[in-house]
Length: 228
Image (cartoon, rainbow, N blue to C red; front, side, top):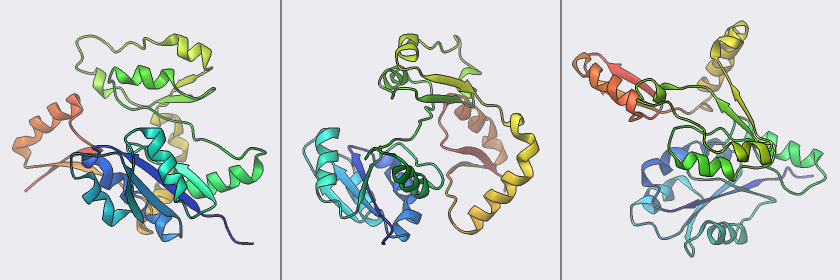
């Protein structure tokens, strides 16, 4: 019996700044025989040009997430269709999690729990539409450090109605597993399975600018200063 394959459908619209990183993270899945389909809704930037080298197929469709997702599903070649937002990363071992989950379930669908990053007001809207019994992990508050007023969660009704669990995570809670984590991450990195992005500023004289940008959320990934 053949192993089921994934058709990953990514609807996009003006996603040029981040689409390459999103698709690059899917490269190991493509190498394993799964396909990535990008469905553009009429971008005015160079989203399509950046996506073509990193996807199996890039097509156009009527603007609208639902219509774009339907268009991608209609041309999917594989057994399982996975819809992925352009600003979202799949968890490690996503292939195993999806296929094992479907094999154990009596349903023909599934989802991943989500973690929301940032302090943009639209995050409250996202939380409102989250799935029943979802979980929100809070693992950093750097955007709060310099804020004149702390961010306040304004949509507690969604937490109640959707039975959402919001929980903090501090890295020191897992200090007894640091060695295990370092070994696992090193193995993933050496195998080319661990992908990451960094923001690098050149020169120690620019370090203050990097720190200020970090507090403003200008960086993507770790903020580093490269010394001459």
